[in-house]
Image (cartoon, rainbow, N blue to C red; front, top):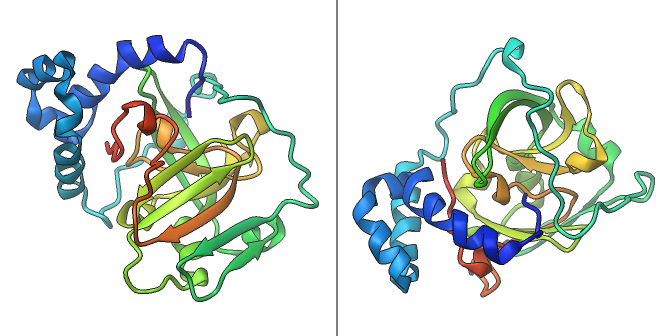
Length: 240
């Protein structure tokens, strides 16, 4: 996730690099696309970008991980959206709803009873920095399976306690390395990094990895509000 400080300047400086150089589709489009993007017609290419990125992503192929000796404890920059919410762990519930047969309302203890997955991956931010982090939590696919999505579901929406919102394609959400994480570097996830639950995955840029997740909604339609930064012009798929 990203900070909203100087948001218009951030969008102007960084979106060209993100669209043309940091995702799979961007590498295909190459430098010739920059002229078009900078000329103001880049939004015409966004659906093409998303389709190409989706084709390049093998939904189930694991991304190579790193040994724990390479973890960079100080490299993960703490960003906030509006504020850092203070969540009472005793009353916290994760709501899972939408086009599902079995809506869920899970407390943290129930979530932590599900199989723990730990991975050491590189977190990549659109702002140009990266950090190798160990995340631990439950595969999002486990949560989705419990909710029993109805036929035709293609997208997953995430709401956060600070008002941040995001959406993913279902295939990326079901990737085996997409986690709802509650651990960082072998310890409980700090509040500033998204406790009690945050998204963590090696297949998406940082702004797709919502912190303080409180609600997961499965749907067959991509709503007009795709994500906070996407609604300001950032790429929706944002795959690595």
